[in-house]
Length: 307
Image (cartoon, rainbow, N blue to C red; front, top):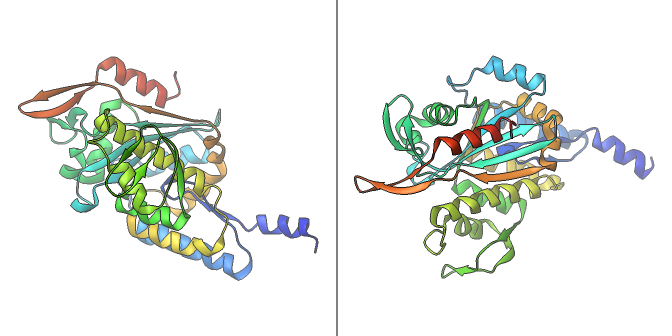
């Protein structure tokens, strides 16, 4: 068998699992590939798959079958507060296969809005503490006037384990700083798991405060996407699957993930990032970010592909 024909045969056996929508590439062959496939399917369907009432499963299935525009909510949960804690990171990942584009929209956690099901004005990240993923989904849908199709919830400490499994990731750091343990020079910075957590959690030394922190969280997600899409070592696959299985939940099942890959894999060719803008204010001694109706309409248009 020639190298070319062997390569072609091997590629027919690949499986690419978009865990946390990061496009992890799985390459293998024979019984080992089958073992990886079964482990991935079992982990996703039995450990990670958590349907929600707030998203109609049949509707999203039909949209994916037709390769239509999809909106996916990414939730990073404060590990110290458990799965019912506040959402430390909130992002909407918008995938448009018609022009192979991806938009990653960050929502600052201090954004003031009406909490769905509670009828009170509060910080948007408190929705998860009040009512878990269901309330977060409903609150963000109401806030931005959009329809969410899927969600991915990640324990923030799981990012450290995930990056270590990938090896390292590289981000383009905008400001130089030191946290007493690590030096972060301006420009490209290579991060392992522990350094990744220091990078995403720093806020006090950033002149942009929580805005800068949210931007770094977005950079890490993009770094994981880029590194995950190029991973080809089969020795890392099962351990990576286990890491994600212990730290992630989603209403995507294994079949959804495979379809997401086949129909939406080229959306990462054109990535646009944006952070919701607003003005900070203090109400009854509590800091909030107030977002105007015009800004909400602008972001809704970005997510829905209207601008």
